[in-house]
Image 1 (tube, rainbow, N blue to C red):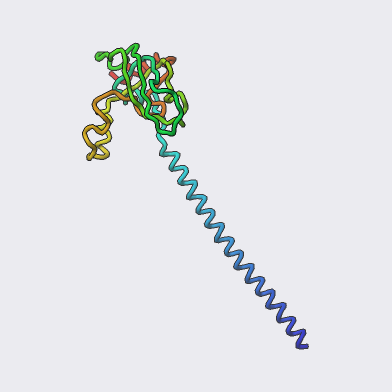
Image 2: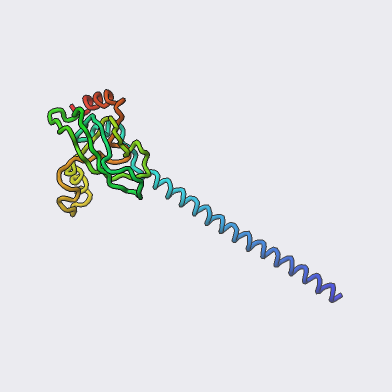
Amino acid sequence: MSALRLLGSAIILETNSQTWLYEVMEAELRSVMKRRIVLFLACTLATLLAVASIPKPRDLREKVRDAELVVYGVATIEDPLFIAHSPVKKSYKFVVLQTLWPTNQPVPGMLTVDHWVSTDWPDSWWRYNSTTGVFFFERTTTLLKRARQRDPSLPPNYFGSNVWRLLGARGDCYEPSTNLDLVKQTIAASKR
């Protein structure tokens, strides 16, 4: 009888420990799942914030509004077209066929501009090889004014002397020649 009682106690003890072990494992699994859900949500939020902070290319009205010089011409990269790690400083030569804005200050027949590009960008944003189109420029002094609003301690020639530079990045400085009439209409509407 005592052996049977001992066996019964062992079975009850075994059942209780399995139940306890099952409850512990279930609690640990819930905890791991909660951590994974929180981690997933945090990663999703970080990704959304990163994507939202990527500057989008300007639309045509914004390009016209922000540009201090708009020309119709032909652009060519003076530097050899080698692929390197980004960003890369490229030198562009622009043959100006027509000054679209400001019309009272014609630009010399040729402009040479340095511009930092990322070789990861689409070629249409930076690889101009005898590309005819409308190009948007701003002065480095204007860029310095905007930067000084954020950081007043910038040195006087932080962006170089008062020279022309391409407007922004990511395709902001170019419209294809097929949009020439649309650019002229936009200039007429917004630069009155």
